[in-house]
Length: 233
Image (cartoon, rainbow, N blue to C red; front, side, top):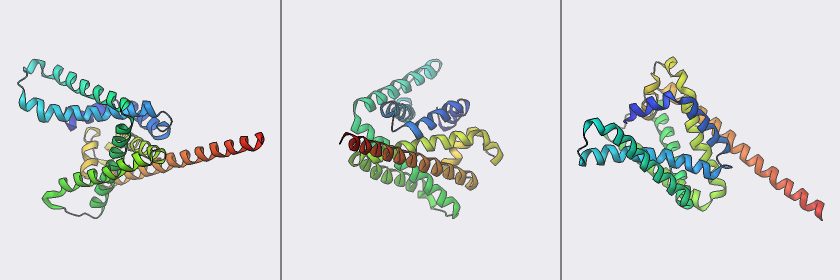
């Protein structure tokens, strides 16, 4: 399953992807364990695919008739192992969640800036993108661990908003002369500035709205607690 195949799977099931994104955006900080499991499953599927492409296929000879079945089983096993690890190791899961959120946000904002200013970063452009993802991912991952109460809600909102924004654009991608199957690759490489701008705008609106709701909910709880305390006194 390469990037094109992954895009095809997401396109075929985009309503489910949209629901998952909305849940993570607005309820991820409340349904923490479930959200961690979802993120762990997604991260595990990506890791499983990477291991399959760069290690298993290069080091093991698999009969072609059995390759698809072995492929699916191997990716699923790795995905579920990572999911179990996320659930069992809370701090590790927090760090990875922050890492993915911070890295992905920085990556797409960087792509948008480069595309908007029409800059050519030369032959090292992909390595620069990876560096931006890793550096900001590490920063946000560490912040999530050391300030988890505030950061985890923001991280969940960011990841959910990215997924939701992508799912929203799938049925409209053809209006921008982009096939739905090519949408993920187009956004990753920043090929279509208008599409990328709308994607970033939807992401920012959803993220800010989610965090605002979280802050309002927390303030409401604090006020209720103070009122209850005053009534008791």
